[in-house]
Length: 396
Image (cartoon, rainbow, N blue to C red; front, top):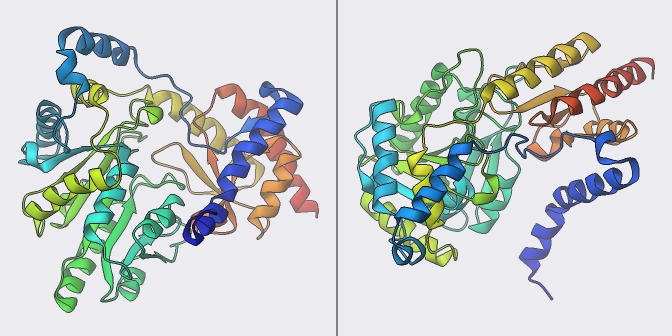
């Protein structure tokens, strides 16, 4: 028999598994082209051609033994150096190779980091709505994830509510900017206020509170919006980044952690993350992808593709009578459902062969997440169904 802990995790992950199963079932029944699947944040865009070109170059020019054997647990020095130089140039940092740790996607990096920072029974705070896997990350280190209540309708985190939630047990705060599921970009004003709360709480409780800024969607922003650089506001910030979205490489599992040398207990954190990669079984991030993505760390997919999807979907849904904050980043839309029961809306949408994700799974019932990283024809095919859903609930 599997462990009791894993049994509970399996039960809590059932909704994600059911989403895959339901999508496959409906596509088999109705045909792939007749199912409008907005459930998963799986980029529709292919990776840039440069990924293939640089991959071939690295394979041809790098000694095979060096490329495919063990390297330092924190990653190839040359990959970390290129990423450090990019961050220094873009954000005015003074990073060296020791400030960067290559990891198995942002998720792998965050899990290693929590293994380093957290003791059982301590608390991790995040802001609702939040990426549902954070619950599992907290479980993985036997800690509690507490969600700060959502600030409606803007979804900008509320520093007053944050201050109420921080306790002596709070060791880390986890933010996701731009946010999944809302697409909201946390403003500089918001981040500064969060920093002020945490600085005050550090003094009150006499220990560091680490802010982990999860930023896989940093480059996917629209209308000239810039994502503020959190380390500018709060010293004890650790940035987790993934190339899954900026380069459409979710299956390649490559990213990095970045932290300044002035972060409290910096040297021990760096050393301990290297140990955590072994404890977690990663050992090191994939070697080829380290070198390829470091070479292309400032390249992007065609963000205008997502922007066109965003504009088409948002404008149509508002016209039909839905309420939604217009996303400034990522490729998600968080739609207020015309019924308080978001799960009822999800089930009703299936009658129109539309798959969306209940906001309850993100700690915010009464909403659904729409992942618009899909083919434009998927959006066009779904619009009549969204319109019919609104008419149904209006007349109910």
